[in-house]
Image (cartoon, rainbow, N blue to C red; front, side, top):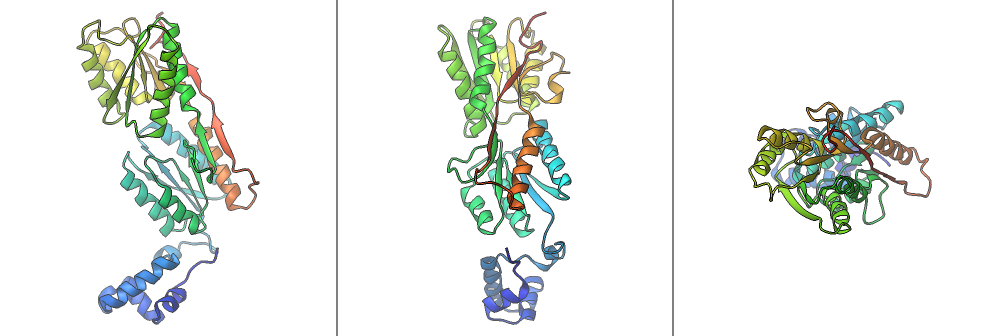
Length: 336
């Protein structure tokens, strides 16, 4: 894809090169009308300002862009590390945008990727992003989804079978005799969380006499997990779930702490299953049973798919990779 230069902007706007430079870098030196005309031309052409263009090597930025939902969750940190492994092997770097569960920030990151002309983008979407992804592709920037699937079938992806993961977690609890299950998670509009709940519901529906209570939190942090554990512990024994599936390990670890701090025994009174199997799951005060996702491998695979598209070596197959869940059983669901 041909890089757009300042001369192209000048021709589109019908002004001199010096006027373009002033309009973009010293707007006080020209009229507002000219500033608007030049900026409109630059936006239409996808022009990168000089300070960003100076970073390009031989017409290339050497950068991959990557958005993640929340870098505070070690799952996403591991996923980034995997992408960096693959990028480094190809002599490239990864520019990471942390959305922090905010779709506005997520879109800002994608616009930044466009401005600095990343060579490709890895996107782990929090909200709906179709127009922004289409814009990147229109600029010649290939996109690979990570921990998500493209419903349109146009984008390659690396994802995880979250329906199977939720079902696996609930089936384990049911197999240990639990019948009053709860699903504790945040933001049902997030596809991954919604699919984990769907899998949990399927398992409960297949077990006569079992019930399921969805419980929604504002965010999936350990602090909120502690608060919800304390709230659940205040219930009467008849209203207390005896098995809980959570949407991530941070929430689960906090939940276990909150329950225990109020005298509820884990797993004797309540068994808890986390999700992701982050490093801390195995060394928590009560080691956490968790659905393992190979985060680093997922990030590395996604970056390799993207690099193949950048290098023109990708085949006709989009390259949609789906990882299957594995349940790692520990003390939070199994009594000694």
